[in-house]
Image 1 (cartoon, rainbow, N blue to C red):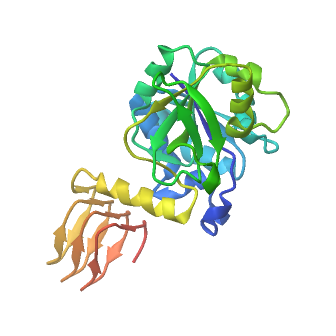
Image 2 (image 1 turned 90 degrees about the horizontal axis):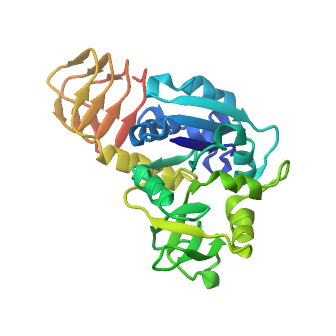
Length: 299
């Protein structure tokens, strides 16, 4: 199965973190967030991936390579100028035109059943299926009015308070038929939510929605970034230690993920969930509480 990951944004709301990193490369549990996404796609069976790159895109390509270490193959398409979400995917048409494909944002952190969503789309006759979540405040997202047969009749991007007609928010995850490329103009800035979906509905083309289950966020703000770190720490399966580890009379209660060559001093106390990067030294009489992430080479 094929996937397209959009990585063209500059991440202005995450500055100063994005002065040195593209948004998909901001670390979560000491790994670039997009690496978590690639690993999840691989587990779900999406092994042909194309990434549309913009701001500092070469950094992303350096971190991921051709994808073989994740069990996938990755191609890269660089945007010379911002073309919008749909316009960016249009630039990758040559890699995606032969079968249905999933579209995601490079800043997405999730544990959703994407294979289920793909299979749902295959058994229906919509040109696109949108992943939807029920949330309390949908003003920062696109919202959809969906009927009992999963057909979307209205879609509105980032509604104001008086415009909210649904609490079903778009995750920005779409399963698209290749026919979608016929509806995206070439060499024009074009967005899925603002341009493409209204055009499809005006032409009576069916758009479906699917209620997805699980955790999802786009790391577009500092609050979302902290939320993503927190629930991924909650998901730590237990305590894992890689390579050399030394401690002297420390009190440790997991779950923890400890990198190679970590040292914890005497009379220190660690209460998980905690992640500690490699080559890090924790001194004597140090207290580290839950939901902490310490990078590599720290003292």
